[in-house]
Image 1 (cartoon, rainbow, N blue to C red):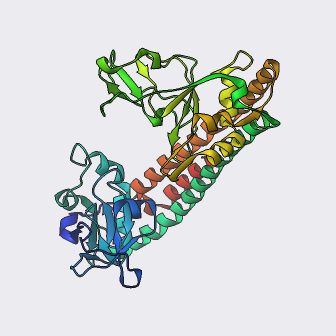
Image 2 (image 1 turned 180 degrees about the vertical axis):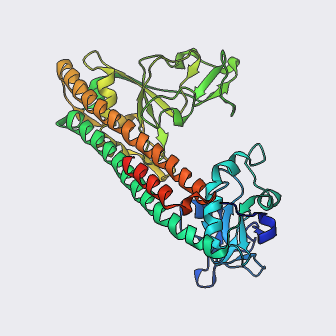
Image 3 (image 1 turned 90 degrees about the vertical axis):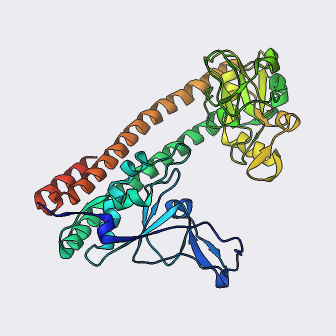
Length: 401
């Protein structure tokens, strides 16, 4: 099917956002909704402000698009309110249906983001938006396509929710297994299971990561996600280092300072590059000869231990909490022989092997769903979605996924 192509600048008006006014307040009764890219992209509640200065007001008939930063290219249906400088409002002319434009721009999100200008933050300019070419079938045909498209997309949304729930259940299964094998019979303190806890120090690092052959110091993010991430580091001048703080394979590290959810997070270091140092926000825990480092790592990851760490952490802000060495030594863990430790590790390995296999399958289905969604959007704006045979074929692929 052949439709005329029109530049967006010919059939839509653009309003680029502005910075929040300096005299803003949070007086909600009189406030004006102020849309920022992070807020509408993440569906968070809107900031409401009141100001005596004029604001650039958007409309429910607009389509919003993020034009700056990590969310650039994301779109949302418009609403009454002001728009921040990271947002543009596109108001379609009478011959262009709002939801048709919304779904068309959604199909371009990745290409718009990859083509965004600027090195620090990607920027989509007004000129970029205006030069976009959009197919323009008759208005009735646009609305028919939107109705058919949204019917299919609702099925993709349901599939995505189901896959996300499956991934959440796998996380819950692993947490349950950790507690079952490493969280029962908490009768011995960490102090009784270790030889020492040693803290790192600050070395006046730069912001850039260390290159090959350079000394680096790990960031908190190296210890946050359960596995050690050596690339999360900052370069340190060679004349400031102290080799006593160098990280080595087999080290058990604990994050001394982090958010409330991740303070006390532990990692077991595998093969690691040389010249990588502990930071002042990291602790090295050395188990005694009656405790396997990998068992102690798993015991510290168990939800029962995590709850104790959270309760003992100090700090007035959830954005940065601290756990002292004294408090960490008080954590209660199971008393287990070396044989019992080996059996617990083996049982957990079986659970993780199964959950990892299931996770790979779920993620493959999720990738397939994303690809089918993009295929559906491409079909909608090339005229192929108008054919019932294509709609049926997409439905079959969705069921297969």
